Length: 253
Image 1 (cartoon, rainbow, N blue to C red):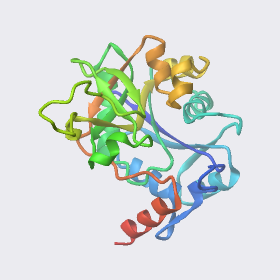
Image 2 (cartoon, rainbow, N blue to C red; image 1 turned 180 degrees about the vertical axis):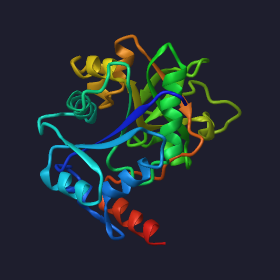
Image 3 (cartoon, rainbow, N blue to C red; image 1 turned 90 degrees about the vertical axis):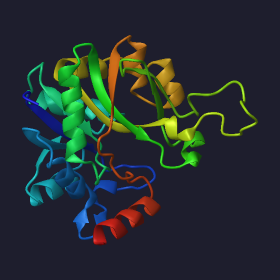
């Protein structure tokens, strides 16, 4: 990809399920460092952590990363990334990739893929990624976000519900929708700076409030989200103590 892009990693201290999550130790390094080092393997011109906590900022500086202090009032990672883009004075046409701070196994290859997808798709305002489900239980799991796309690879809808849903049962099978054909959304986003600012200044829409999925605001506005099938998918993110323990085992191996 010839276009330069910047990765911004939003990281807040006040996680409800896992307070202080970015600073939790994973096999000798804080989670935010694991995420930063994984993201730094991509082709971005710069990787920056956007945070509201001085302790997180200090930890980033300690391992040699760049941090950007942002407001503690932000309700979403998108808003935090938008403020960071303003502080960094990024050009309106610059591509920004939002990598969540609790993704210590985010492949650099996937970050590059999503940035290139936005660069190559003139119709899309946002680019993201998906992958196949790992097991059939994820189909009905509301913590696993599903995405359905059109023939051009643009998102039709994202939902915590089991989509697509088959109305009629065929052949007496209880597996009416083959779960291997369902796509799980991966929470990584690329946008140009100008559109990111527009998005962050638009109030939440009813759909995103109902589903608790902020990407639905883009579709509600009538804009397109390009969805890539990940060439390399990340491991699970860190949301709970169990996730943290699993990551410690993985990184200790």
